[in-house]
Each structure stands twice: as structure tokens, then as C-alpha cells.
Length: 479
Image (cartoon, rainbow, N blue to C red; front, side):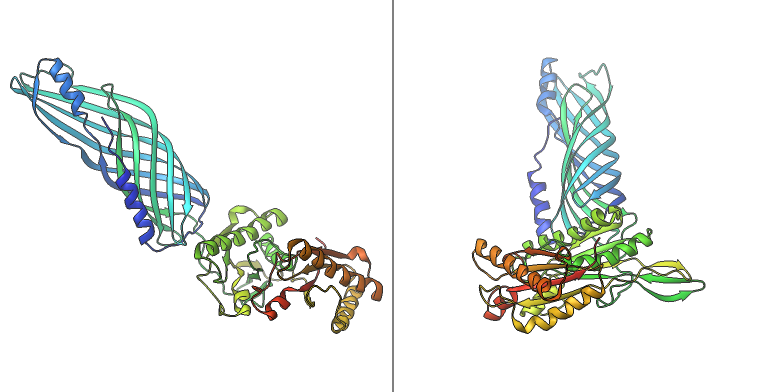
């Protein structure tokens, strides 16, 4: 057997990827699927006619049937958004030919091929609903060849079979109809032995349907953003239902978890630890500044950073968390304003609700305060208008001795070295003011400068630049 090129199939898949709408859902876990389509092989007519000529026959006509119906059944496990393993059974059908000869006679041949395979699958999300696939694997298959002669052609051995292992490769496009059901278009190439000593390939062009087990729920309870703490709702007999929510915002182009967001995430972690049967989908969003592709990537990174933080800092099992980036596609505010852009740079969590025995309560949210002090251009002096606010911060710290404070310094668009120095000095001057005027223990004050790397706005106007020249005062608790 010889192979047909798969270039046309690859081109078709690429066109489908651009034409169909999108989802890049990250659904980990087990799934089952089945596919059917057209299997294609090239009959080795040159070798066949050469063998007949060596036996004293001239081939006067050669007809072939190089296509047949093929199907596959498979199961797989997806470990993350980029990697899965699949195994299953395939049957690529039967191919036949007829060679008419002189002296008068004919040779009829047929080949069938089926077996089992195990593949490693790489996944490249394109958008919210679609992804490209590439696979490489091994198969263990059985090829059966049968021959029959008429007239002057005499066949001594009419049946051959061979069982062996070889490689296979494939490319495909996947589209998610829902969290549980997906469709795939694929082309796969199976390297095989045709049972009479020739190596060849059979290509399977297929359409598959997939069902995923344990797909995450789209929404549990739409808890309001301003009430992130756990709360009991709707008692059922002797039980009550508890829910949790999370909504935090990010600075421009930033994906890291900041100090101000650690307390709300702690609330979510407390809930997930208390109710180990619940799962959470972490949704990342951006404003509309920049390209759609960059915003989709950034939103996915933001969602993944929250997942990683929950896993690393709070020991939440990774299998309970799903990170999904929506880019700029789901705004909650007007992207034409700085405030709207800030609101759209956010993380939202959709979390399962849980039932608890009557009388038990979830841990309350711990209070976290955040203040912002603005500065004049290139200045690190603490303006007198903030002295009263700093006095209240000092009084609050004195009455709550377990509190620690993070002082974060920021600047607008200055040279990197200057921006870093000025941001650190601004934060340090606030710390010095609290120590010298109110006797706050310096060990409770953590000072850090971020230069111009964490902007609240885009530095377009004088007001925007003023917003970025700031010190954030974040009151929290030690870990």
C-alpha cells in the first residue's frame, strides 16, 4: 500500500477553525467518543503489475476501490487545557482491486485493517469554543489480505494475515457545543503492514462526537459581588445551603495576585476547604484595550494565576478548579472610561453551593481595608490632606495588634530607574510618617515599590497620570 497526501485535509481543518464560532473551555477529566467517516488508501498498482509481469502476465486493465467506511470508538482523560491521553478501537474497512491480464485472466485482491490504539493528544485552544488538536500514538492492528484468480491466473495462497504494532499521527479541530458535548473533525494516518510484506498507510477522515463526564456546572448561585463572604440561604429540613463568590480586579496588563486580593481569595479558600465536594470555575476578563488575542491570553493567565494561588497557598486540589479566559467579550462596564476599564479587568468565580448540618457556620470574612494616597509628579512628600486618614489607620492598627500593613508605591510613565526609586520612596515616606507620628512598630509595615508596572489607568490624561502616582495602604492579616 502507498499513502495519499493529507495536505487538503489540513487546509480544510484550518478553514473550519476560522469559520466556526469559538469557546476554549477547559474541561478536565474522563470522556467517551465515537467517530465515523471515510478511510482512504492507495492501492500499490505498480508492485502488483510488476509481480504479475514477473509471473508471465501482462496487465491490460487495473481497477481499484480505494475508499471505504471507517469508524472508531475511544475513551480519554484530559489532564489540563493542553494535554490528554486517548485509547480505543478502530476499523478502517476493506479495499480491493482487479487486475485484468493477458493471457486472459484476472487477479482480485482485498485488504482489511482494524485494531487498538493509544495516543497522546496535544490541544491548542483558539477561542472560547474551539481548539486545534495534534496526536501521535501507537496502534496494535490486524491486516488481512485475500486473493483470487480467474482464467490463466492461478493463486496458490488465497489468504494472508498479519498482526503487529506501528505508529499513527493525526490533526483535528474541536468545537464545544456545551461543557459536556463536543464535535471533532479529524484526519489520522495509520502506518500498517499489508500482510504481504509491503508497508503503507491508511488515512481516516472522520467526524466524532464526545461526551465529557463531570463537566462543571455553568452557574451555581449568582451571589452579588459586594457580598463575597459565605452566607446561609433557604433552609431545607434540618440542613442549610451555603454559597460563596469571588470578584477581584486587576491593574493594567497585570496577572499576578496582589496583596489587596489575598483576603477575598482566602474567603473562597475557606469555603472550598470546608466543603470539599464543591468545585469552582475561575473566569478571567479584560478591558478592550489591545488586540482580542492578547486580551484572551491575558484573561486566561489571570484566571490561571488565581487557580495556582489557591492550589499553592491554600492546598485546594487542582481537579476542583477550572480556569477560563473570556478576554474582552464579557464587559460589565463602559470601556470608553477609565473606571469602566478598571471594572472590566476582573476575575469572577462561579462556585458550587453546599449543604451543611444545621447549626454549623462557615468562617466569616476577615476585614481588609485599602486606602490610596496620591502624589504630585516626581514628588514623594506625603500631602497634609492625608494626615487625618493616616491617623485613622494608626488608630485601627493600635486597636488591632495582629494587623500588618502593606505599603505599595507606584508612579506614572517615568524612566524605569527613576520610577522604581520614586515609588519606593513614596511608600517609605508613608511608613516613616506612621512610625514617627504614631509609634507604629516598623516590623508591621511592609514597604515595596512597583515603579510604573502596575497602572490603574492608561496615562492618557493628566488625571490618569495622577491616579497612577499613588501609595496603596492595604491592611490585612498575617498568614
